[in-house]
Length: 280
Image 1 (cartoon, one colour):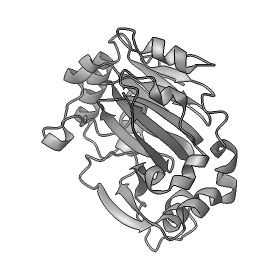
Image 2: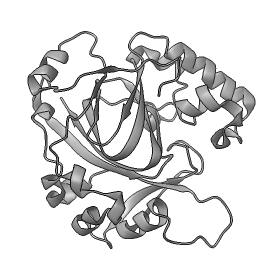
Image 3: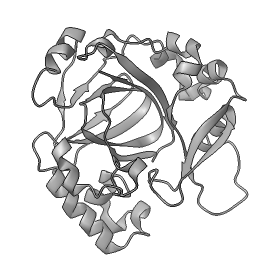
């Protein structure tokens, strides 16, 4: 449920490719919640937490080495403790999604996230479960740029950033919350001065942790109170801009992310799996 400060995006069921084509000529193009857009995908019934995501294990391979983002729970890729590591796909699932490997330390375990992975390209057999939608070819250039897969535990977090493409993210397992801001929200997002991350906000934790929990939330206890307060004030200004919104996606749901819009995402209520497509 959205905080009173944050509006929910418009929700449109039975959203056809023609509907999308018409929507993309609007000015401005606004985000949309698209329930059941991918209801026909086989992945919705074959990718299951109950069997340990066995279908993914079989298709990707237990021993396939994958690139994983490792960091503190609820922090994004600008955090000083964030790093990229490589590990077998099955080990990643067992250790970080299903907690099947006991820790030898009493310290809090990091969060591991298979984020924006190109496994869909390198494992073509996965595409049988998540076939491309005709919607992906309704942009001005009728061109699909890239599709990626995301697998992460509860609390996985991607900070506000923007992309030069139209995006459709589709949830397959679990739930995820997106916060979306129009391009002119840039002054309120404390953008990174690092050139390669110039499209990324330095707001360190998810919106929900700042506008709801504040300093009492365990994920922000190590942040100075003045940092939390500054972020809250900036987000209040950003979410007052017309079009700013929240989208909650469950299995089968999708979110339309307009080109150039700032968006952040947080995994909620357990492990999640999703795929996205960027197109023009």
